[in-house]
Image (tube, rainbow, N blue to C red):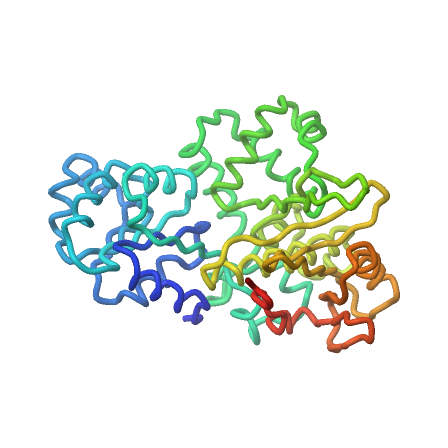
Length: 388
């Protein structure tokens, strides 16, 4: 079993709150983590039809079987339980009684906010971070192709077949649970078209034309992908430095392996000269910063910045009142172009320094305060530095 960086945070939450909710995509390792940390608690899988029927028909009787708490896996499948849980949590002393997991952020948060607000600590668990994968895969192309779901590192699994099954299961089961989408063929085409827009500004009108539905539908479907942890919208940084700034978000996937599968790439070798290689590498690094925040119980502090003249910063880390620029380059050789965006930002904001995360191996500290960091050493960038 891979030791997860979030293990310490979930213990902290269990010591502070009556219950803990661990939320993240299917197969991200939620069940493995909570069963490892809370070995003494009974485990209940609410995906099981018989268990779910019992919980739905007699929620009070169902919960009475667990006077000292339990792990409730995929709890969003039985939202009726939460109002009964409220009374139990209020009447029972101590903390960390129930550990709730869910792969649907919207349904789980809706249930928690209605019944358990203030009683539940939240942890977002995404697939493996680069630090957690360390030593298991260091080749960029293989890493992008394989992605970061734990199952692909614990077993001798065929990544192509695993993702094909994941996509099929997701579209046929989870999408229907979230939204009454009847045309699953069109939805899957929409999903594949989203993969073709990784790292690009999300233009919903353009996407609607290509999919053949209206903009309102696209907006609804993007929300479905977000709440089930398939895609992530990186928001623009709005502060106006007397320039016109882009206000559309950029689209990324929570996992590059899933995006690669949707793009129809059949092996890691095809990525060497693939036109999407740079965008996929950028996706990998952006999401890794997000994983590291979530693993320590922090909220999303990531933005990008672009003006109408095409000047851009791939990633801004909002740390207190500071905005730390990060440029992301998949190449292995540092050129003067790599520093151009950060130098422009530094001049405009009257600040110094920043980071370039790239596909090479050499760490460099430049005289202009810019640090050049190999992607394998991304954990040396302290995401909480200077935090207020």
